[in-house]
Amino acid sequence: MKEAQIDQVIFRQLKRIAPESEPSGLDPDENIRRALDIDSFDALNFFIQLNEELGVDVPESDYGQLNTLAQIRRYLSERLD
Image 1 (spheres, rainbow, N blue to C red):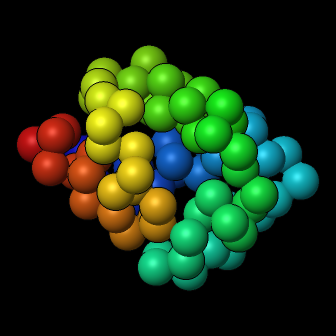
Image 2 (image 1 turned 90 degrees about the vertical axis):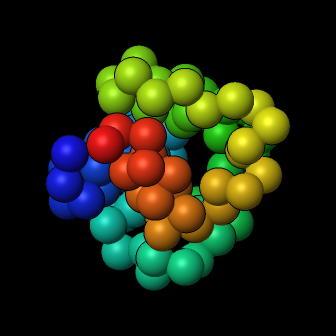
Image 3 (image 1 turned 180 degrees about the vertical axis):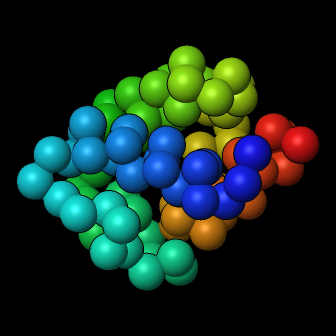
């Protein structure tokens, strides 16, 4: 799967949990949770939705290392190859 396709999935899921936001305008290294004011419950739902859409299981132990678009994109990309 190409990065652009992964980004589309990420943006779609971020938009579901933060409908007033514009995720595509985020800087790749910006902390998504802070920028979009996402709490831990929303973050959990975000990772569950990524799993359902992409089939990539994100264990709770990995959540802390997935704070930016670049980190999430890289994590998913490595597991989709």
